[in-house]
Amino acid sequence: QVDGEQLDRFFRPTLRRAMGFIERAFRSRTSPPAWLSGRRVEGSLRIEALSLAGLDAAGLAARFFWDGLRLEIPDLTAVVEGGRFSGRHLLLLGGETVRNRLDGRVDGLEFGQALIESEFSASWAGFGQQLAGTLEAEGHITARTPEFADQPLKSIQACVTYDARRGRGRLQISCLEAFAPGEAFTGVASRQDSKWVFDFTGPKRQFRLTGSFSPAEWTMEARPR
Image (cartoon, rainbow, N blue to C red; front, top):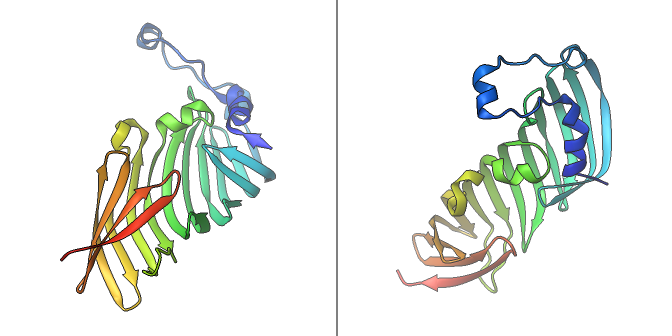
């Protein structure tokens, strides 16, 4: 079992000591230690259980190339919340924190009554407590086979951006679409108090989804045209 705090401790020797404003202004940039700038390592690793940013991954397997201040993982796979993840991960070392860039795809992730497919890019700093406050991400999400009583939907699709620095508006959802047997809908996302509201319009009817992502609880209601 590996978590974010353990990863922070592992990479701590690769980081530069944090400096204050005055020290930054009058001190030239320090060079990374010779052992780090000269490191050239490649190999593979496997982590049976990883807990990071509220997500649990199992069977993580990776091939890595460590070249000085760059640690590249071009082939990363894992099982996340019942779904299959694959992607590539770049870690930039030698600064005051590890800078991360992840490009990936998830298939079959279990989310409430739906199965999620997503292609996304994300960046953040560190692995422990710092991660949640620095996370930025964007991607396209498809929720397949959501069921709402006797009104089945084949899928819901959306473009999503996330920026932890935006506070309450950190999650933004656009280009909503929904598909039912023989029907297609366009949608608009909005917030009402602590709930998300998705209003969909199609050639024959309109409907609204209201709910939250955590916990994943959603209700559907027909809307007058």
